[in-house]
Image 1 (cartoon, rainbow, N blue to C red):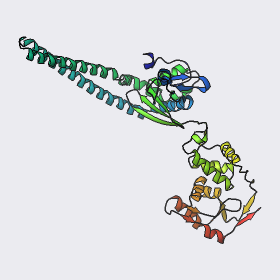
Image 2: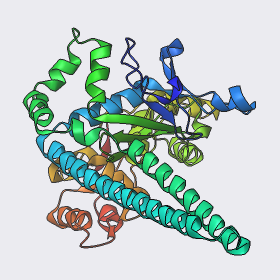
Image 3: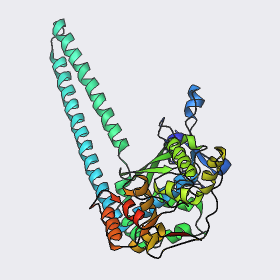
Image 4: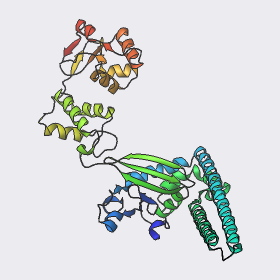
Length: 382
């Protein structure tokens, strides 16, 4: 059937058109170009009246698959893929040999049963009936073995043939230039799809509430799994959406500015609904205003004793991420009292610097700077 084949590469910028399958129901998906492009499966709805499988936005999926394809063209990856193809070919050959031997065995048993039946005295009806039953049973085993052999032959992929020395040599020659060829505006969509199909047999998609799970099946049987973060319509649909909201409000009520909240939440692994890898400032502002939390007062310029370091200055001096300090403070592993503005000041002493280094290197599990802080109040408002 047409829906079971790859088809020829056609124009259209959706990269997986013709080789994409639904991971939920197992049927072929089609490309829909409206609204930016997506892969759609409506087989269950069309044939059974059940709800259609969730569509998958194409842009992020195509980019991830293209990146995996170009990465796979590295010489080391090609060598590994070739070894996998050879191993798969050996397995397929062994399975086919076993199926062929089983056909020969059942045919011999059927021929023997036929000879025994032909030699029996027709007047001996009981013996003749038993031998006829055995012959019919042997013939059924022959048909089953022949069917298994045909299925085994049909299932053998064309990958090992395509990954011959000539093909591999050509790909290695092109590997260094292929990213430029791929991105060249002169390269048509159909050409990109043809290049992709040299290595990719098919892609299987499954949509989860906040990501797309992609299974790339390479020519020869190797498999690569991708988990691609997707945009969602609301924070509530994120797995950690409620947690992020509570944490955001906690920081906002403590008077932390929006840009600092963005950095802290992103460092803790949160993201906005329409961003795959970070929290956006507009998300923080919208949630804060919805809860009636006003914008914290603008920071006034302030001076402090040169014997103290701000959080940013301390991070720069030690060569560590500033967010790491905030996370340690939040987890109460780095105990320090905030200044009236909400900022933190660290005594610029070897004891404090060595203590933070030891905390960073897991030599100590907790550092208390509150005592030295009370003894040295170097903060001055400007």
